[in-house]
Length: 219
Ligand code: DX5
Ligand code: ZN
Image (tube, rainbow, N blue to C red; front, side, top):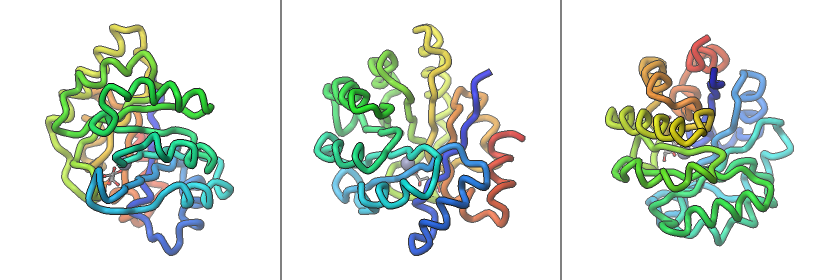
């Protein structure tokens, strides 16, 4: 059985208490810390960059999962590697034909590589990445903001991707879903083939973070 992992997105956290929050996530059973990097170009908002990753790095043993919503991810690759990123996800909409070579470069730096597709991008765009990927990410909302509603068509994309991975002999590959994940839809998302669930609002708006992480996982 493939392991279900929960990746709370610190985008939904209180930025003035980030250090405490990151420590708490580990105590509450999170599997990864999802860091949403936005550059004001690939997506309208600007969030934070490698410096945030560097500063939270010593505060947790959890892997730092860096989702780069940036137009030129290769430009900042070295900074994120040095900052201590464990996983780096790059958008095929930003990298085009350079996605697979960039993933190879990420892996050469000793960091796990992942590619992402937006809701309007066909899932087939990720197929070339399956051989190289340590993880693949399917956006279930339009990138840029937390707190949006899950786009139901994502379920079919997840099914197609999991089926393709199995066909390629990579049935165990981590498939991450990002956006609008709730306690209500987590089961169908997992049934569709995702095993790494990003959750921002659901985790940070909950009165009991430990309980909500366990429920998302299905415990
Ligand atoms: C959206 C980000 C997501 C976002 C998820 O651009 O990539 O990671 O924080 O937030 P929720 O879980 O609130 O939809
Ligand atoms: Zn994200």
